[in-house]
Length: 155
Image (cartoon, rainbow, N blue to C red; front, side, top):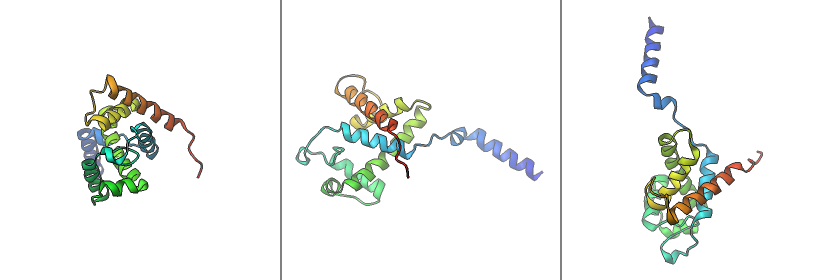
């Protein structure tokens, strides 16, 4: 009876929450490739233009992201002057966003990457099919694929 009850619970959980059993896992290499593709695609600007770090992040975004990822708020200049921390924060956010898009667009890594690139530029996952934003998404996707195809360093 105990085995039967356990089996029923497992069946109930897996049928009630099928998404839990098939949650796509974003790998560290996927996050790193996306972070680097965004860095390489960022318009080159100086801090006095209102954007900070190699990723060209807005000051109000820095405050939100650092609070979310580091549990403490950094100023734009702190973010600008600490490239390792900036990369850590961007990686944290990209992990979150890629995970969302891998769930929303299962089995289509390229589309998920494109959606995150669009979100990065506009705040929306869609709507980047023409103009500057479309070019940005295409470039990020191309650079992402290049990063993913690089051989992995041996430990």
